[in-house]
Image (cartoon, rainbow, N blue to C red):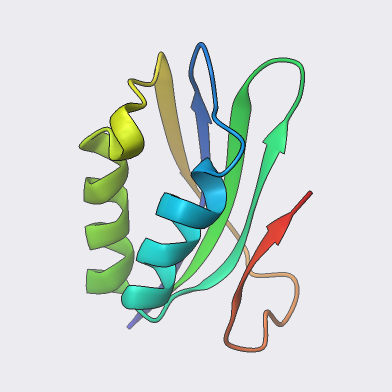
Length: 94
């Protein structure tokens, strides 16, 4: 079974390479597809993730373990209707 989620994570400071070094790398390891972007100036990361339910759940667990020593102020996870074809890759939108 497949699962699609929108994750919004806010933190006091998001380093420049955080998305590529941690988020994209983990998504690719789990064979997930979707996208991630930093919404400035609020230091908020928006992630759309799609894949097998167990792998998406592992990805969410990973976010809660403070990747890159980022301690989030809040993490919101909500169901998301997959609106576009991510073509099997996980993109970083800058």
